[in-house]
Length: 413
Image 1 (cartoon, rainbow, N blue to C red):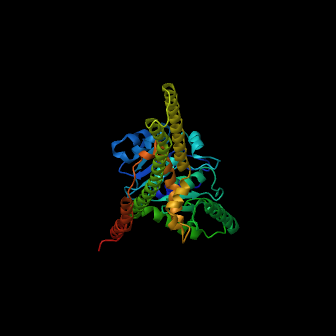
Image 2 (image 1 turned 90 degrees about the horizontal axis):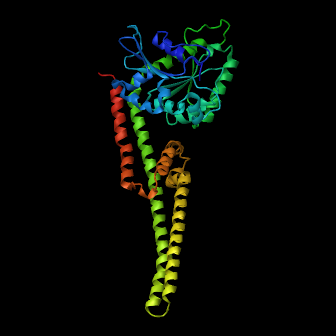
């Protein structure tokens, strides 16, 4: 959240006063900071339009308002600076603890803050979540970011309770730490909460009567800095983890969409057979009776019967089609039941927490696919052997990639 010491921490890391600091929110935009040969500052449209910034072009979809809240600072650092070349740090605006959703967050900031944060989170190698001990709660935008933007990114982020030097004694520290831990347990769908790093920004004036072990907190600050500086070592692992999770989500989306598509196709066949049985069979019986002179009808009677039959056919077809459309809507509204049915075998011996967390991310994609299709029958069917190939790749290829990543991390002999 805001006033948690994000900008001050970045300034200490860079060794320069590059970001404004203060108790009140001082920055309402996203700032990209990186080490460079010469100092320069670029605004959002320049960053998004420059040919060498192709990865950032995707951010254009968030609109001109967002591009006006984006900038990049290239900094010339001293030779003894520990900041490696090529490492980019993104300073984000503080999260506002007001009741908010992704919709009114867009109207309040002018762009969809939750989706923008998710875009950065998916591409980041490390995410620092800094909390102020005075405001350790998780409400408003903080809640949306933790439950939506950072869903599935738990392996990347570090939770930091910053500015602990502002606390007077161990009782205040226990209250702030406990409040943050309790709040995180309510929004992070895990049995155990992640480790909380407790630290303070070096250079802040510390009260002489402070009874907290500030030396221990200084060591935690060093650990956080070391995690930031070794992100290049985590890069390959994060890419493989992202690839693995994407493949698992693709398998889940394909399995659920295929199951619904097959179910709808089978129901369409049943509807057609029912329509044939209702409409064709009586007409064949009537024609046979007329041809065998069992039933003699006048011409005008036949004309009336034919007209009534056509109207009946139209009514039956309309009724059956409306029934089929309602069945399609029912499938789209019962996605959770379909998911439980497909992966039922995984819930026999445990609660399948990993599958449920993945479904929380995959469900909106399945819903978008079904709602954007005019007719679910037209969706392609994924064959079982194709899904089996995904599982084989997860078991063999992903493991092989992780071994390669581990070899790359090892120092050369």
